[in-house]
Image (cartoon, rainbow, N blue to C red; front, side):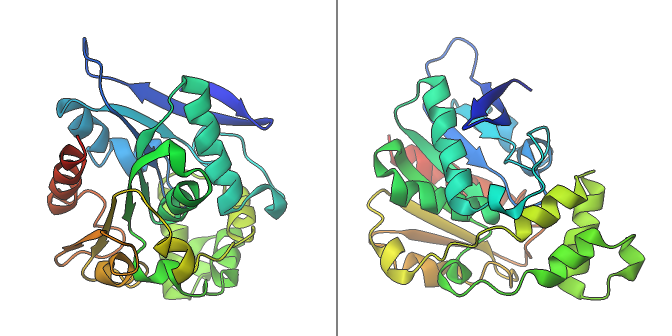
Length: 254
């Protein structure tokens, strides 16, 4: 993957377009412990969007995938990651893009829409819905799970799920532990109510991490919501209901 410097942090990214076409750009921002490969390529998203005539831009968040690994929690936080996303658009000379984030990436997407609204044509918040505006739960168990010698030492069910996923993706566990301990800037109901671009909220019907899609959508003027039936947090991302819903939403912005 090519890289660029975002405030002296090396960020890896992709930029792919349908051959011979001038296409609308869509920026994808992955979730915690994931990457472009696992969140967007292996789930079929990159190929799906390209096949439907869209330019696909995506980055490995700092501390993830092929991007630079930082081991100080001060190097992380949603505002810093949103800054990476904005600088990637700057690097590619893109004034405005549709932006979709999953889970942690949805927080980053929301922050970008609030901090730099002129850069976000529309926003998709997926894998994080009603819980986006609720107090962030303690992240200590997840950090401890990432620092454990092996997964057998992890007993907390949620923390164990994240450790298993991080192991599967071959992530740098120390970098992820620093990331989860980084600044957790709150996003309030009042903040999301001020988002002016078109918004789609997506969550699995069984996703207890995200919370209900409708709970967040009703706080944002004009926002739409999709609930993916019988899907939890880890299995919503590649579901066809999610993919088709996002495509219809993006086409409606044309």
